[in-house]
Length: 188
Length: 145
Image (cartoon, rainbow over all chains, first blue to last red; front, side, top):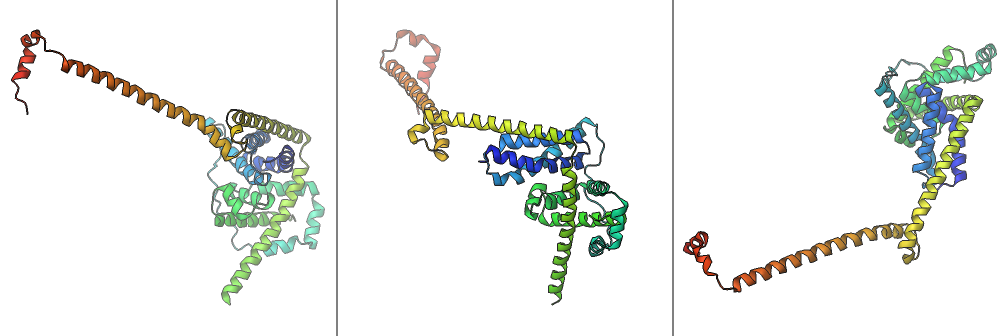
């Protein structure tokens, strides 16, 4: 059973990323805060008897479900018009080369000049905007896999899909981000 | 040979993608760390509320365990886990067994009362008025199998 301190430390470590993840999905800070608070309370009430090691995966699942619930409620209220089912993107990457993007971002003079022309805060903002503009499933896979650092199996479990789908979503997300950032001359 | 090259290429591509993705994730962390003070405060409030809920849930759970231990679990040495679950089920089993026993006793009593009435009726003399009853006469005329 997770102690108060373990739960507190865990929530503290995850709360900002959780807020961002929810905000990327619902595009509303207040709603995102509500979703995170509901998820925290649900975790604390229902799963407090679980070991601390299980909390990260449980919390991510709860957060995903809470976000889905929010969309369902919005759909019922007809207050939010968004094509939520449009998770699958058309693969517009073509023959885009990730290696080329990486090399361009690895300290070349072009990268330096891009970094000089835009302030650091603005670069971070643009990176965040590009992530938030990814198709829903790609963004979720990317955030869970690389930001929350879940492995492929855990990500698949949270997303309720196969491991192969997770890999595909992640790969597409990375290529889309690399392409978008390169077009703006931004090095992550 | 060709297959091993393909595998190497795929793993190399995945490694490059992962490297790029983790670099993006690091930038996202920087953005998240620089969250608005108001949002950070509301997140802190949410966290504290969740911790309060956790404490309440723990208190409620420990009360129920103490209750079980006081009523039955203590007899089993106060051990937790399966014994506690078993102890919580025992009263229900006892109640169900008691209800079945009561139903069985009730049925037995009803049967013995009915048997006594039947025995008295069969052993008693037939009243003369019975022969004036049309239904009884018809009964007597009916051939027995």
